[in-house]
Length: 336
Image 1 (cartoon, one colour):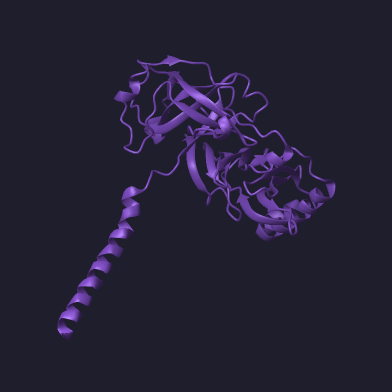
Image 2 (cartoon, helix red, strand yellow):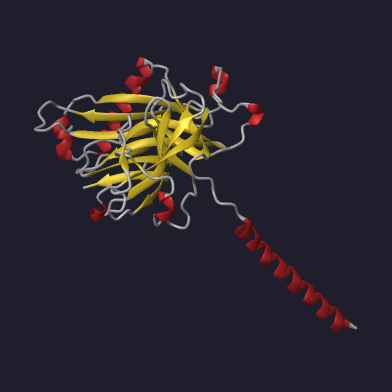
């Protein structure tokens, strides 16, 4: 009587083990694609330009396109209008965005504002692919509510359209309390005592990181810096600070030393992450906009200038990271 019981128990154990193994694979098979975000730039009064994917035109775009005026913001090349069916003839990666004229997307303007847009013109830009640059294909999108782009930063994020809650197709925070629930750049001036404390912390950091030759050249020179307050999606206050030390004796426009820092004011003012300027670079990363990605996520749009390259990047901000370690959701880059 004992042997059959053991066999039954063994069979049950095998079935349980099989079920556990199978369950591990079910979420993978049933997973939805992660939500994607793209960069967008103001094209003109009520339109933006979006490049959804990198492509290789290999010289085929020129005979088919009509040159358009350049966007009012930099970094989005000189778009060319393409025939509406042209996208069907361009080799695109299997995971590329499937889009068509008339599709609706959401434009994240910053300050918690969401503006629906409709794709109205297919565009592309062909770069110098021979040196390794990517070309891009995308669209011009028109905001549904005229004037939505007025007094905005000019650089935005785009996501697939979500049905609005409460029937508000064009959402914009109306009160300070409402705004505090969304990631955004702050407009309030930074107090003088905070700026003084920032300068002291930056000087201390410079002395830790700069070479002896750089420190000797700097001497007692104070840094010139700009402070950009911003709020991640959790409502806390952060600063992005770009600083440079110039003695006036430099032989070119480059400062003797420069750094940028992500800082938090509480419980005491401190550095969370540092952006260092490499020897070949011309500029520190520039913060262009902060957007709320939803679900507690904060997006930052940066302009990053290298020695012979430049890029616009949409990244997910997190305390303790810098632009080299943050998750990049899209980069529009080019170089010589």
